[in-house]
Length: 209
Image 1 (cartoon, rainbow, N blue to C red):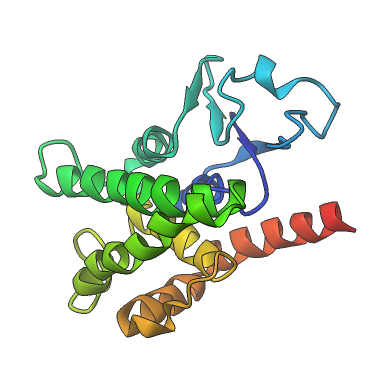
Image 2 (spheres, rainbow, N blue to C red):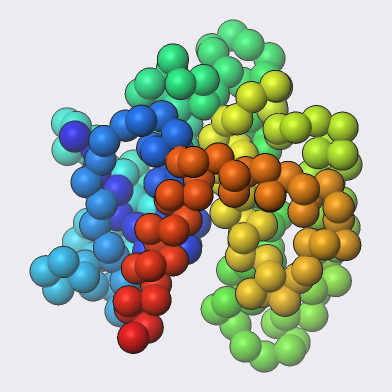
């Protein structure tokens, strides 16, 4: 069975969404990204991954895979009948990689990461200016298409859904991009997405109590 190390509402949420959309059973381990402890037993998360970041996907053979783009594509390929990634040889396979890279680099690392980790205005000034231009890219795509890639939900949608959910607490109201707001509403209406978010929100509230 696959095992996912996650932190509630961190980027590992997209991996949970993908697993649930595909109907893949997995074991979930809560890893605290600040204390670097595994909550289940208090052990050192750095012993699982020296990067100290989620997601970490433990494969059935015991190998460990990190970085959202790689983890998401692996999950999609575990159950190709779920249609979470275009097949090998399909040109859209590279569109999927394009969007995974874009969300990871331009929204996650360029904006969400500094917003939640750095507090001084100097560090946040450039990301705040840049995010408006960044979001215009998926906004334009989703003004004319229901999904990021092709005509069905893929792991790229799982990743963008997570990123859009984090934008509001990061100080960005996506209502100024109607296509993004409508898209997020559609994604949240999906049963697997709704359940994944509810699960992690409940865990987050429990940790804050």
